[in-house]
Image 1: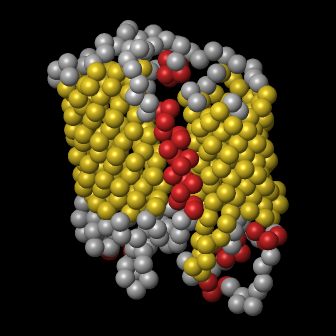
Image 2 (image 1 turned 60 degrees about the horizontal axis):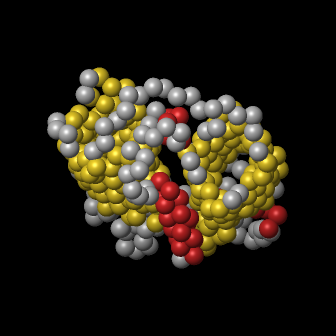
Length: 371
């Protein structure tokens, strides 16, 4: 499927600078972590309450990198760990929900340290795979996954305690989410809350230098960012048609530091199949004819970007200025990642949501100018 192919290419481009395991010229620490997790599937829909009959069980393997050289972007964020992880989990009912797998880049932020005990927080965003999605006449009870390919989001609170120079015990409490961003319906998504226990093995131990908080240099830079995005979505469960969606966006960014920027922007959005997504089945007019205009929206939004080297995370919230088809909510949101390709050219992917309901996963290219 073309959507899956392009999304995977952009995802891999994003991984390269984060998990580049080069030499040890910059006092870089590398480690591998293996963990087992046990928890629950959070039944956020009534049907799930009656179907779930087991715990969520699984594990994860993480490759960890931590750089200590001064002047790197990590030095402005308390020297976090970055890396790539593999995650597996059952979902409390294997005959209906099957199992989930994910590959993701992550970043672990340092919170505090008590003696040898280290506390960190984790953010992960990647691709997920569900091995038993909804299928008409075969697996109709699965209303959480409408497709094999999904987005994966993970948050965690981590604790590490070294027992030797090479080995540390690790534990965490994690919240994990998988859904396909409405590229296929049904798309209720699934959430797990789990406790983990495991160990970290140091591949190349590096004595961390004494830490001294470093503030990112202030910046008064200004720039413009224009992006063109595309995605595909299934607007309604009762209509199997897959529609093209996308957006043309222009943003003016104000930098406060080298790693943080705020901005205002203008969106022109096409939400494929919008009239179907905004109405319940019983309210549909079988004789209605919809045009391209019925799928168009314009919006004004505010955004914040966090820059980590050549990678940037962004979050945006806005309101609609124009619509031919009334949206379910007057506000919308975006969450995603941008990766510098070359010069001012960027690749990105993210999720466009109508308030808290995902409408489509979008991917595309952008161009920055200014500064």
